[in-house]
Image (cartoon, rainbow, N blue to C red; front, side, top):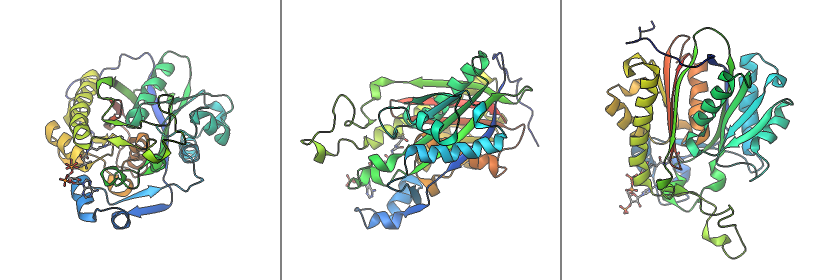
Length: 339
Ligand code: ACO
């Protein structure tokens, strides 16, 4: 039964923006911790106790970020019962675009036949999907667009250094999507909070492959176009930023954490989620967790989790849900939705 909120949720938005369909896709190939222990000096025990991850999905060589994104999008479109031609805007949050340009969103547009949409990518690392939800909401509440497709998709295994045990055990591939639209009624996005701190841009980044350090014949062996991470610092910042984002989103919504039926967090590390549950004073069971099966799929993670929670009945109509994410940049975001 739905709890009564501790105070009236408030929405200052001119139009209610609802998620009317979700979809997700993960590649078939599974890489287990056992498999990894044959590639680098690690063990199932180390990975499980430090991260909670048991396995992850790996995209095929010819399976691009846009392929996964399009598959997730088509499922969301089917659930929303709309035609791709009704989509006005496609936002793809990704750190692993098919190419530096054009935008991966343009490739998705072609693959799903959303011929009337404007398309752009969002670069906010793992936090990108909720940045997309905020942008979509702004366009819809301002009456600029009616229907927006937001996708989080990443092929992190294409930028993973498979000889670095500090990072290669953490990541996987996948995509998640949502269709946002003004539907009328009260159900929808109640509050969003997004933030960034460029001071910490050097604790999680990919140094090569951009204009600052293009990959050349001379530097190709330096693994520059792979993820570089200071794990302990990322862990610390992740807990602080996600807690703060959660509290701000709740405050803006006029709700207490105890009004929330389900928290859907970024799926990076179970210990990060446990630390947040502890500091928010709620049991771990309130969190939707699938990182044991997929690892950290970056921008896709929270979107895949949302789709699974939706399709499995873990979240039900009228529930208040809190989504909270963190990524390189640093970037973070919190969103409260009445489902
Ligand atoms: N297998 C075995 N040993 C390992 C492995 C591994 N895969 N990786 C590191 N170690 C070793 C280290 O070399 C170190 O050994 P040493 O003591 O001999 O030097 C020891 O384990 C401890 O290493 P720490 O880095 O201190 O381990 P820690 O407990 O901090 O856990 C981890 C590392 C899991 C990376 C943790 O810091 C973490 O989760 N950080 C956050 C990472 C994250 O969430 N990144 C992504 C967030 S944003 C985004 O999604 C892109």
